Image (tube, rainbow, N blue to C red; front, side, top):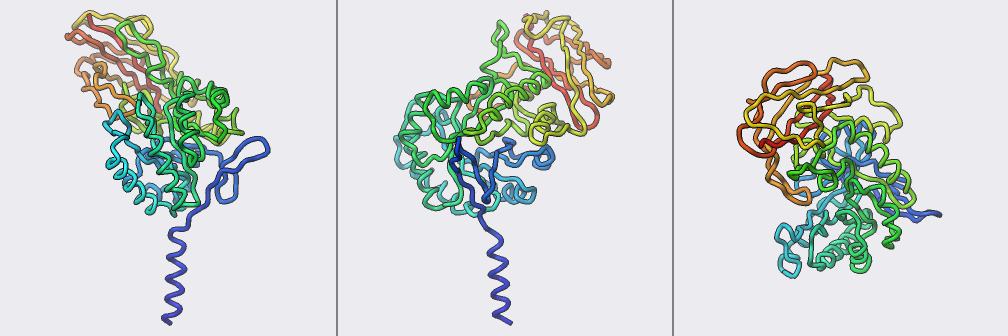
Length: 419
């Protein structure tokens, strides 16, 4: 009886943590990621929120930037049939890390080694992402020595999962550093926004001969768009973002599938970065935007059962965001919009007035959300609002959310300046 109990215990414990082998294979014409012996093209959602929605939209993988407290995420991803690109936050120079400090580098190495031993056999694990945008405005190239040491350590401990590091855009000098100093990096991650359609050519021009994936993509970056004369970046509407995403995916990730092994749309969730709506494919109210509909079509080839509303115009005092809108203080102004919904749902507008964000960071570091000024919102109709301009001189934004009442929304904001 005890012998039977022993074999039962051995059987059940051996099925708890069985790694699924992931590898990169060279094909006749390029590369492919292979998981459990089958080709695996990354249909990725960048973030750890809305996992059920990611699965429903057709995603097969999610990406994290940190490894801490991710055991429950791995378990939930595995339950849903999703994999996880598990990130190590290799501390960048901009956050005070000194890669000449051997003690600090060793402490970071030891922390990550513990994580590798903890997570390496989890069946949801897809790959190890060693650092995110450590090259952003950096000077000390010793960071690549640290990344190589981590990649080699992972290969020594985990024969089942490949390694990557994710860089900010793609630059020739950074590619050369990684090629020279990081032979244990198996494939390259590239975060890229407005420049995504140029990535396939740049990868080849800069001599990257291994596979790559797009670590973040979706909106045009806040550093890439036109600005008002007072320096406020002009955010695209959710409708404009979705239209561009469809084209960008086709002309980059899909087009270069012989060397590009997929990508992660950013951010599968919501965050404050320049504004509360710039990068999130969901809103703070947990509503989906049109980006989710586009990704559903890309990942599944099918239309979403309920699509988000579309915005065709939004103006303050008859002017567009590009018109450098200057308002007088403490005066009433009218904002109008036009929107439509494919299913004919009754559309419900919401409005929010915010000061222009001043807590501006780099590389996606956490930013504080400005305090709302909604006391200045006055009368509303089905397609307009009257608001009182702030009394204090400065830069502001009026935000519009057009919801369909079924969990989907269109968003846009207009920057303006009170003289």
